[in-house]
Length: 208
Image 1 (tube, rainbow, N blue to C red):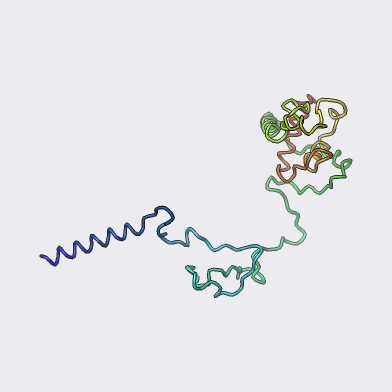
Image 2 (cartoon, rainbow, N blue to C red):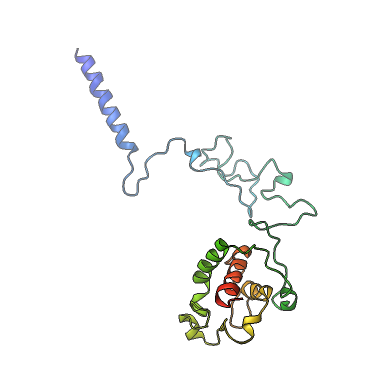
């Protein structure tokens, strides 16, 4: 009887100790069940560690290779990145071709037609994008009186002078590549969204 009680006491203590040791608190993250599910083996595009034993002392990998080994054995020359298929042209995630014109090629840009169909939804999205990216300089009504525009000075009044008659391709190009005090926004705004902004400028601000 005493033996059974002793076993129960030891088992209870063991369970309690086990639960306590798994608890996370403060700087202690606790223990992970199946850590490979949380920490996958990455293929780094700019590094190439081909030694399969590199980091073996640290490894918990199921393939029994070192923790730092990151070469893709399924690709030619163990490359982690594959070269594009020959004679193919990359497209953006919106399905558009990359914009190739340089900043100084405004005349060619002016000939480009807006590829985004004009709809009420597109105008609504264009308005939101204009408010997000353009009002700081051009102001809500496009008159060049945004808070940042007042400090910078020389911001275009989209309702005045020659700006009203600018082709859509010209406006797109200036947003994309920049011109004068206007900085390039092509790295911040995807092409399709820029075209939506152009629609909003022409239809709602300039009433074209």
